[in-house]
Length: 282
Image 1: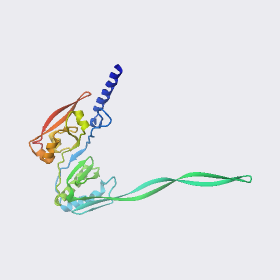
Image 2: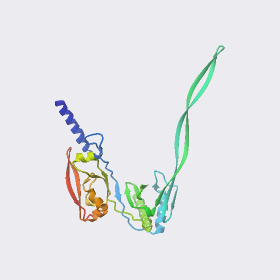
Image 3: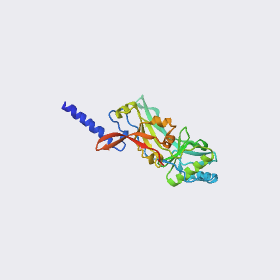
Image 4: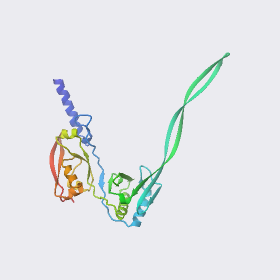
């Protein structure tokens, strides 16, 4: 009985020690099958600084050839007009493979010929030129935002990433793409809020809730950030948000967001129900 108590105590220390980590929601709580959604820092809202003229926007996008990376490669050409931009990239891919090469021979001992057989491994190297392109149709853009040093362009079917080390250059590029998108009639969201991941039935049972969605990232300088929503919060009334037609309409209403929020005291994690009033989150 005493040994079982020690084992249980060690299990509790191990579990609560995992909570002390800053990425506590990536840590398993009581088993090895139900990891919490990963918290993903680094998202920022895109707020256009100014609308660029068509000529200026086109010129800015062309000149970005000197500082952007597409899938880790610098574009060798950027073809852009008022409707779309194509970032063309190419690179050399190296590979090697081995091949067994049998050899045979022999030698004489007196009048007797003794055959010999051997096998050598020959390594071959080859290089192959690869080409690809990132195409962005301005009228199809639905959202523009940043993730770390990436400009993220969302079109409903996926996200395109454009990397630049210099934030000012990336901001100029974002303004230019946004300006052409607006001129093309795109409905671009500039105030992204936050991202969520639906909790599994097992995870909900551990929290003692019927269902919920965990906030996995907050878009800095967005409405959710200003309203006080935190990464790791569990939203309990996600159905109300869906019924309102999404986060934007819900944020514009007088309703409250019902949240389960954790707080840590030493190695103990406690959860409490809170409500965040979203009216006035400007």
